[in-house]
Length: 68
Image 1 (tube, rainbow, N blue to C red):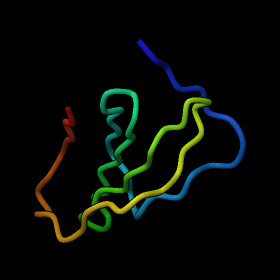
Image 2: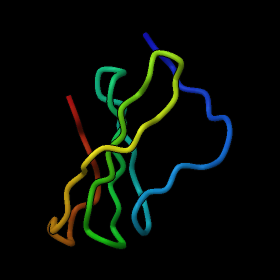
Image 3: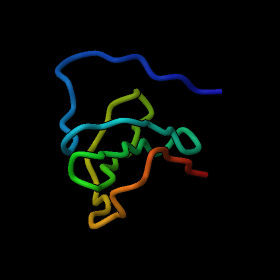
Image 4: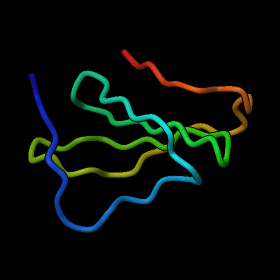
């Protein structure tokens, strides 16, 4: 099992993130209800995050995130 420890400056997501999922330890996703979008990051071997393309235009009623 891998774990993440926050360090350094915060990472930017879209408006109002309400849920986070660490998929397989390699990708981190946030569900952003303020912009009906998902922000996505790769997780480096040292725990660093790098922003990658997410998704936009999601239904406004979403309340949770599950990633495999």
